[in-house]
Length: 72
Image (cartoon, rainbow, N blue to C red):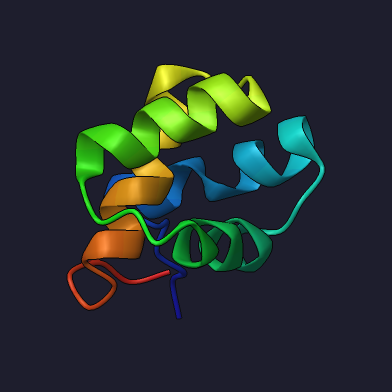
């Protein structure tokens, strides 16, 4: 049985957890707590408040806003 690697935003999750020291579930909870619903505004929030790179921020926000679209 072959294991499949995550695709899309989830492929960034291991690196995000290692680099920023929080689980992706922690990041999703923080995103939900902001009350912000705009992709751009959430990405900018992660970049400004948590010094996250654009690609990592975008991956988290894409998954957060469309959780059923990709597998983890």
